[in-house]
Image (tube, rainbow, N blue to C red; front, side, top):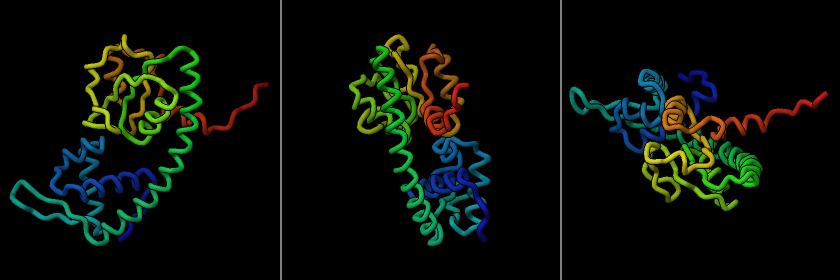
Amino acid sequence: MNEPVNDQDAGRTFRLLELIHQNGMLTQRELSRRLDIALGLVNLSLKRLMRQELVKVRRLSARRVVYLLTPVGMAEKGRLSARYLTDSFAMYRNARGVFLHHLAALRGQGVKRVLLVGEGPLAEAAFLTLHELGLQLVAVVGDGQLFLGHPVRPLDEIDPAAVDRVLFAVEGDDARWRAALDARGHVPERIDDLARLLLDAGRPQVPVQ
């Protein structure tokens, strides 16, 4: 039976279906880490997908299961993929314009060395834009291993003194990364939240009286 979901739930469903399609042997803890959401929320989401007959579970042993997409689940993944591909193209075009304006202004202020934190669509748009403007990418920081051909490095390998600006492109639960940046000595005044930039760019400007 279909259950009403909001955009956030739909996005989580798509990512969960995609991960299960890629590797149904992932544990709930591994899914939690990759989705950057609480373990309990992964458990609830999987139960909902099973109720909707999008996912089935096969027990391999007393402590090991494999998750499989049903034909209905495959169809739903395809539907959500088409939806989010369209949304992503629109977001990407908008992000490129906003980031181009912002990074050009930073370059005019003397900013040259940029640290990129994050590996999602916002980070991809920022990555291409900073190269277009000739800014130096100090490193890409995140949980993965490779990002658009660049190795992803741990934050503790980066010297804050070698960074003029941090582009914060973490999507989802970002508290862990904010705390890590603070602990490493990256001051808030030199950290640009890319999601916030997009949000502010979309707000109507209030005329000054």
